[in-house]
Image (cartoon, rainbow, N blue to C red; front, side, top):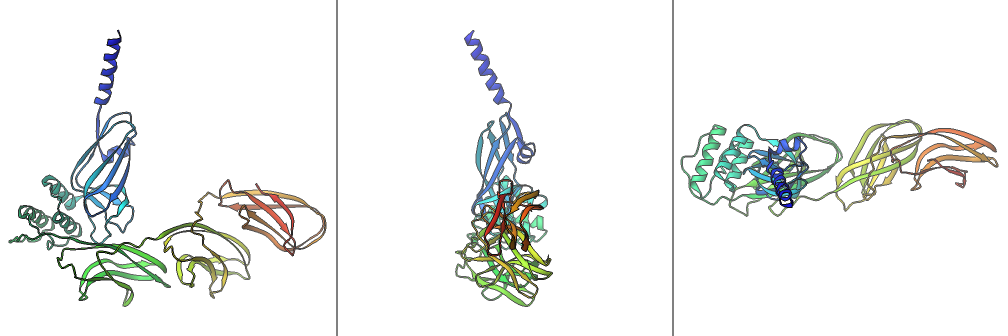
Length: 449
């Protein structure tokens, strides 16, 4: 009897795992049978992607990643990656499998992906780029020559960088690129090593005005244009960073290049670039700053982040309507900025007068909560007359969040005060309402929530 039970148990397990479902990556994600993580491994061609697949279904699943699938970078200034060799990954229920995927970069004007660069699922390429990827996969072409062909087709450019020592491969790639781009194919192929120099870096600049039609371009040492990264692009005033890539096949390693940002006839920023360059790492300020201040008159104000020299780094809002009287305002700052500087949030009127300023703390992470509205009634007793009385609400950090009145005259007796308090500081934040006299002495204090 035990033998029969064991036999059927083994048979059940075999049958369970025999129910293997095969899906392509997009189908598997859309049906929520798997969850994925896509990270860059660095580089622009070869095994440049680490794909993590978690099977959330009760069945064994085989996932196919077809040639021509494009993983899209989360950063729009970093190159997307196209799959050049199909892949099949089998994942057992509730398990995770990792696979390295052969890919090539598709936007030579963007920066090359760095290690751990995040990518999204993306989609399958279309048209000529898909045809080229399938051709490269069929022939197992994974060389730098093939990478140059991907850039040529993606950019609809030319075949000057399609050469190499493997003449049959070079001829085959040249033939399909010629057909796809509808340009003449070379008649003579001279074997020579194919070499790609990769410069992945960034340009940073700061301006006090908006740029209306900026152009970023790369030139050689003679001032001849090599690549245009963008044209007629608008940028707001303040600090900006643009990541870009420059790839060339010139075997002269001493050749120099420079990048230049212009706005009309004005040169905004320029510098020499080299293969040793990297992307300047910035700190993401995801902080929340609370300001309270008095406006002597109605005005329109600009709110911005400045460095210790008073130079504009990040405008938050322009022409903010400010009514006469006391104000409590919270600003959430989401911006990548150089970490070595000290920053201050300032509100200035149109005459340039600073209404209020406060240092920005990069360690104070912004908590983005829904609006909370409290309708409260305060009851208290005043033992003796108060002059210069102020009533306000503070949070647990002792920051003033709302001023209810200032410099008032209060007579003795029992008091009732109804007010509405609105905030975005979350349900766990504790507040207290405080009454002080003209000298700042606390006369009364109660919990708000």
